[in-house]
Structure formats: structure tokens, C-alpha cells
Image 1 (tube, rainbow, N blue to C red):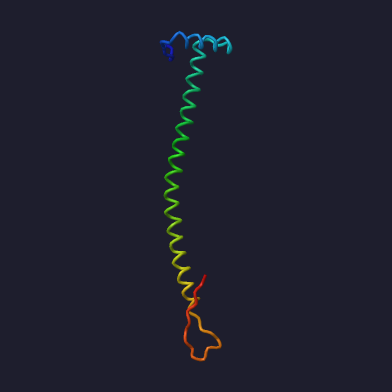
Image 2: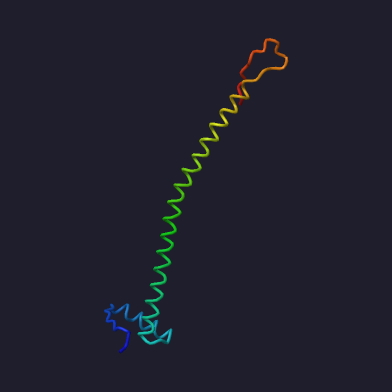
Amino acid sequence: MSTSKKLVINLSKKLYMEFNKALQKDCKKRSEFIRVAIILYSEEKKKLNYIDEMKQGYLAMAELNLKISNMGFETDIKDFKEYEVKLSESDLSNDNNSKKRRYILC
């Protein structure tokens, strides 16, 4: 008993004429041509689905990466501001009163 199945399809006249032209160019039997077309379609559909999944993954990771980088950036800004405050509170070596003076950093 054969494992293959029959397939009956309806085509418009225009599509049928294009189908026959393609058959003549490729010199294939109809069943072989349709079999190859179905295989190519399936492979292309898998590639498009894979690309879409990759796109969704990159979009999800972009949001996560942005959050992570902002967390580090906020810490760096806080540390930098503390550093500037410490720099601005310095003693002058020739100051006899030993009072701290504030300098504005630009």
C-alpha cells in the first residue's frame, strides 16, 4: 500500500497558465513540481517564523538591557556627585583659619 496521498486543487485560469509555463521551464512532472513547491514553501515559512521569533527576542532583551544599564548608570551618577562634593570641600594649604571653602566645579 502506498504512503502517498492524492491532492485535488482548483486553480484560476491565469494561475493554471503560469503553472504550466513553470512546468515547461523546469521540465518536471506536475506531482514533482507541486511536491517541490510545498517543500520550498514550508522551508521559507519556517525561516520567516524563526526571524520573527528572533525579532521578538531581541525586542524583549532590548528592554531588559536598557533597564540594567540604567541601574548601573544611576549608581555611577550618584557616586560621581558624591565625588564632586568631596572635591569641592577642600582646605587651602595657605589658609591659617583652617576653614573649609566650597568651590563650584564647572
